[in-house]
Image 1: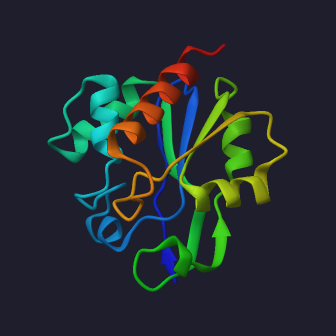
Image 2: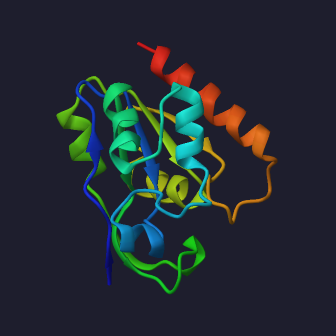
Length: 162
């Protein structure tokens, strides 16, 4: 059984970014998006013009930009890192998190698995939903420049809301 991470939560968060479950490498490193070929932190760095040389710098992007970073899945069984191999998942209490932070108004799902589980368990939440292509290097269905543009535009749009 694999167990995910606690959320990284900024003061007065506006946007919750949800992955599915950390990869094998991320779990080993104890870092969100720790696999060096995942493009999540590169997108965040470009979007917010902040460095990502250390994990502490990466977390500062979350803290300084009114974000929460978490995963839909709290625990699961999985061989390897692919979302398609996830079984017997237990979800995180995203509804409780949303209730605790009234400034939160938007959820961004990083990939299809995150979106599918969010909609299955939390579709009743009154939060705007952006479903974006996965930042995983396994996702090669979209060109990288388009992936970056969609993520950056969605982040900027969602942070300007309310």
